[in-house]
Every structure is written in C-alpha cells, then in structure tokens.
Image 1 (cartoon, rainbow, N blue to C red):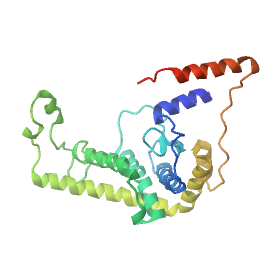
Image 2 (cartoon, rainbow, N blue to C red; image 1 turned 135 degrees about the vertical axis):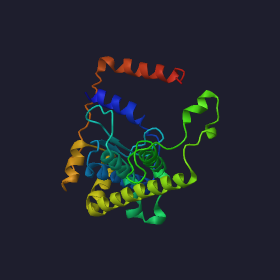
Image 3 (cartoon, rainbow, N blue to C red; image 1 turned 60 degrees about the horizontal axis):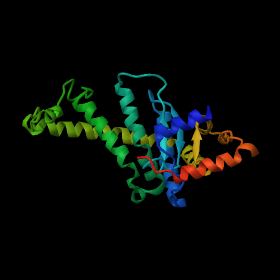
Image 4 (cartoon, rainbow, N blue to C red; image 1 turned 45 degrees about the horizontal axis):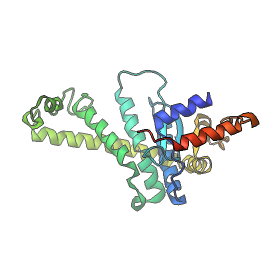
Length: 250
C-alpha cells in the first residue's frame, strides 16, 4: 500500500525534487504558506478534506497542500466555492501575518489567479451574484475556434463590466478577510504546523488532526524499506548501472 500511496502522490502532486536545495528562510516561508492553506481548508464549511501537506518541492511548486475529495462531484454550491476561494488565500494571508506586508512573496501567484477565475465564473457565468442575478455575461470564447475574432461578439456594456469588477472585488475581499480572521484566531496552530512541516517535511491526516486539536503531532509513519538480501544485491547494482546508461525518456 505504501508503494501505491507514493505512486498516487507522484501522479497527483508531481515528482519530488529532493535535489533542490532550499535555504532555511525559504523552508520557513514555504512551511507557513502551506500551513495557512491547510488550516483554512480545515476550518471552512463544505471543503474537501486535507490529505497531505509537504514542503518538499514537487514539480515547479516549492510546497504543496493536497485536498482529496471523498466522492465524485458534478456541481458546486456557492458555499463550497467561497470556501475554496478562502483556502486559496490561506497561504498569502499566512505570509502576511508572519512576515509582514513587505515580506509577502510571489509564491501565491497561482492561488490568486485561481481565486480570481473562480470569482469571475461565480459572478459572470454561474449566476451566483446577488447583485447581478442569474445571467451569463461575457464573450463567447468558443468563437475564436471557428475562425472569427472573439472581439466581434460583446454581450455586455461597459457599465455592466464595471459592475462585474466591483462584485468580483467584493467577493474576493470578503473571503480574504475571512481567511485572515481564521488564521488570526488559530495563530498558535499556524506556528505549530509550520514547525512540524520544517521538522518532518511532510505531514498527513493523523498529524493534521493532532495539530488542529492543539496536540503535539505524532511522528509520520515511515514507509517500509524493501529488504535487499545478499543474493540479489549484486543484481540490484547491475540494474542501477543499466538505468544510468539508458537514454532519458521524454
């Protein structure tokens, strides 16, 4: 099962980059950033459970907080979408609380983009704005694939576009402040979770449950090592040599 678990993590989170050297300051900042995502995600309603948090670089990310749905989902409530925006801002808010406004980094750029895209869809596509109502606003982006310019079709006035911007900003600001209130209230848990991440690098469901209850986190379970006997040790070395000589796969 540990092999399946590692394979799943590799596919879902990307390959671990143990060779990437991070400074202690970078590790600390990443730990607080990911802890912020996890704590907010565990504190808001209708949110997918947090499965794992890691400050080991995966792919292009310095750290990762993995949310794992418990069941297939085909539609999303307004409450769930707002909770998602709230947790996306958790990393940025944690940086600001711990390191100050001048210490905020570019690490939240993808989180901000995803939160903005969600807010735009809620307001302009899914009819989840109380002010603008159940209408779909915007241009039909599919037209560009039919050889026609997307700018030829405009479905809203400048005044409506401005209202959408205002409504989006209000939605994002409200959930940013909500995320901030959660982390200010759970600041001690934020410190403890960041410390656990710096110590263990990766924490799972059991450690997260301990931390959210104010308990010291239990050490993560070590995956069982594959025994190498005297009979197959030379074969293993041979396989390693062959792998080193093989051409890289792209």
